[in-house]
Length: 356
Image 1 (cartoon, rainbow, N blue to C red):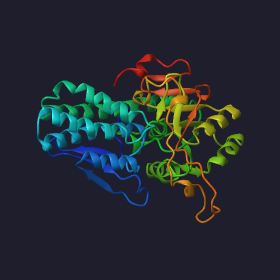
Image 2 (image 1 turned 90 degrees about the vertical axis):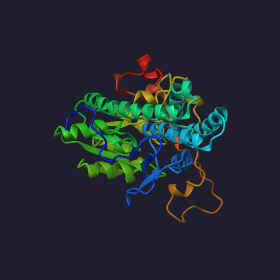
Image 3 (image 1 turned 45 degrees about the horizontal axis):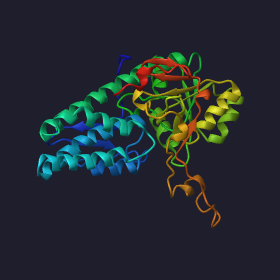
Image 4 (image 1 turned 45 degrees about the vertical axis):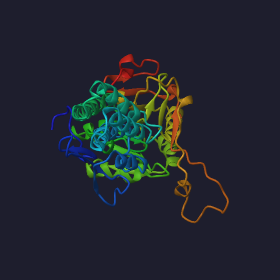
């Protein structure tokens, strides 16, 4: 297989058919690794629900789900009939629901807004707009796949001689139409025959590192060891981890990185031990409207508290704090790995913030 633009081996998302009779097929990531179940979605409300319950997740994949969800939204508005103005109102209502299904990952609202704006001139012709929305989503999918391939190449170079690499949460083939963002360099090095060893933080409270990263890397034949977040700094001190690479849900104008809760701790540990801390993300994750991480809304998932603890161990009446993300200051980032290359803090090219 060529190094450039390989498709994902897992196919976490696929559109099947045309705009009139097609559906969005999603791999239900909430059930992994125990069950590989695919969901055929025919309404935008189903896509919103899948996003909210984390059946579809990961910043680039959320953007794609939103873009394809707009095709369903336009089809539903057309089926409702009525005047063009009424159909437009129905479409806008559904588009807003998709854009706001989750607040933190910027790829979702950016994709929805960009697709909506790119096809607005066809608002008077619902069928033509649905076809244009489908073409736009498919183009974004190709763009994201190509971005993964470029990130793989630039990331492999940025890792230098480091081959024992820590990652946090899941930013691989499950969250893109390609080989992923943070995991893409590891896939590429493995395909080149190099001995790569991944260390995956278990990533509480939903255990994406344990359930998803370890599952997909092991499936690909890449050695992967799961470690509790609290153990990673000690492993760095022992020299067993040589670098860390993570994905991102949003990168602000000043380079602040919003990612899964616990990422900030990884960055601090890397700085303390003189190790590279790399952030891999496509330009769809860069937010031109957010000056810094201070203004980002951080999701807190009520009801996740017991996931941090062994069942039955929380004393009655003890509260928990359940943030799903945190902000890593740009000063802690060694390099940003994008489809445009490797960039240092304070050296992010304006093209990363250009419209999709």
